[in-house]
Image (cartoon, one colour):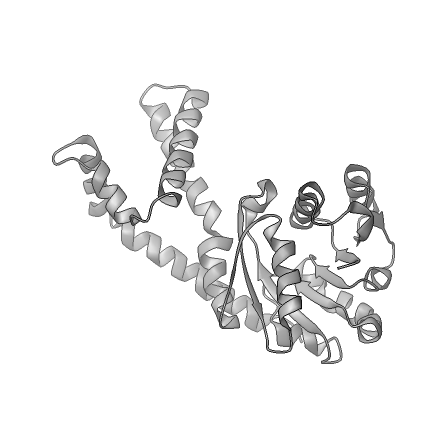
Length: 272
């Protein structure tokens, strides 16, 4: 990959740039970016020494293009860059939520090779998980290019079917918010027990971090790990019994199902 172009300089795009440059996978001079906000572009340029362009089409003269824009701007941007994409034929990586490969290709003269991705928020600290999907026209070398780029911000996995992206959105795309929600209310519970917020935050965040690391380093299932912490008639069992009485397990599953169905809805209403 000689040159990477990125349209959109938001948080996720900035995380990818940071991951690629700091890991040494791609030098900053091989990256060119554009954004509707000139200030955002110059900020990224000053931090990482990448090139910037005021014209999205100029960015599309690269070997690989990342679309990192807001879904509502997608149609206009695709229409704008379509002639350049047709001429230069770059690989396109889309991290735009709600837009399927066929919907993107529709505005690019049905000729582009596209990898669709769903990274999540921890990519900002190189701890994300990104699901990728590509159709059969994307070859192995292009698979490897896409994977290398997204691996710069965390782990990666490939999906067998594009519609699985809706489940990924519900589980890992929205997933960090579920853990933040639990942490938020654990902190509030700690404050009600007499601790100050700073102490509660430290206890909760470090506990969450340790639990995640323990789960990641074990072949033991989370259910088994939970049971190993739960002594009969002990404090943990008292809390879990209360959770069960309020159908917390069912509520969590229903919430994720709601996110899944909303992801499907958003894909269907995307304008083509």
